[in-house]
Amino acid sequence: MLRIGIVGLPNAGKSTLFNALTRAGAQVASYPFTTIDPNVGVVEVPDERLAVIAGIVKPEKVTPATIEFVDIAGLVKGASRGEGLGNRFLAHIREVDAIAHVVRCFCDRDVPHVAGEPDPVRDIETINLELILADLETLEKRIERTSRMLKSGEKEYKEEMELLMRVRDALNAGRPARLVNMTEEERSRLESLFLLTMKPVIYVANIDEGEVGNAYVRGPGLAWDLGGAAPVIPVSAKVEAEVAELAEADPDGAREYLNMLGLTESGLNRLVRAAYESLDLITFFTTRGIEVRAWTVHRGATAPRAAGKVHSDMERGFIKAEVVSYDDLVRAGSMAAAREEGLVRTEGKEYIVQDGDVMLFRFNV
Image 1 (cartoon, rainbow, N blue to C red):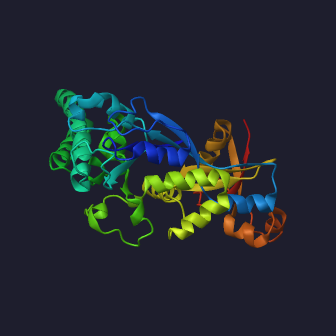
Image 2 (image 1 turned 135 degrees about the horizontal axis):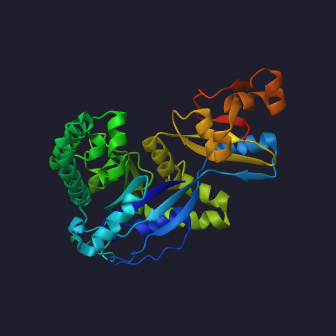
Image 3 (image 1 turned 135 degrees about the vertical axis):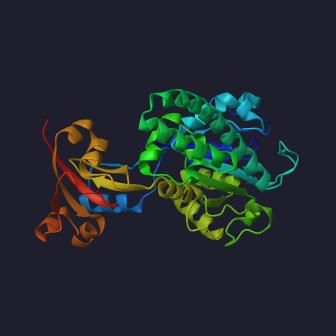
């Protein structure tokens, strides 16, 4: 399951956003370190296609794909040196697949800022610096080990040292490891280090509720230049909490409220979509038996790898997959009609799964 860690400075609105996204009831208070042990909530991935497929197939059960959000305690300056229980919190970040970095872009005298006044640019730099310093410490340990192995004269250690030095130079220049130009093989070499700055980042600008719905948020809210390094999602955690609460009792009323605010979708939808794009994920569907279900895989996954998401035996004993695209199934109106029109294809082990594929796996173990 995809895990997204919600991070930021204390009182940035992380737990409020987490509660709005997950309705998990995490404790929220206006003092640092309210969150010590991470709160975890599982959220359904919104995908209109799932309901459409269910309307065609009419199953007894519909199961969406899910994302796990992890509300990680607020980091502070000096976290990489253990300030504010920083080492513990940094360890929690290592366990997630992507980071949703909540940046405070609102003023509220009742919610004090740890540095006095909100300053999005400074706050972003504070968190990024702590992640970079933590990664530098990890790299130095690996460099020390690799330098000893260089004495063997083996080529792989020379290549590894060159890679480590390249990443260290970038970090020393204030650039995250994910922006270092490297091959997929080099990225794989770094996986065992669990570098914090290798993780995809989505910046969540927690704006004032009065700014919601603006096509462009002026003022300090989004007044920083990320150079295209990461997506920025403007969200009012306070408004999201109100929408989430309303949606539980009155879904239609929640949609009307969003429309009144000038929004076409909730912050959850935008955050999930940004996470999928950042991690290069796609969705495929299965309609086996009484259930229609959505599954998540990385773009470029083969049919056997997708089958393994359903069950490990399916990947091990994969024979073939019957595949119809979502658009073709909708056009045909039923699976039977799609077969009659020749829209259902038989694909083998080399087939690359496409977003929206509806698949039936054949296997033997």
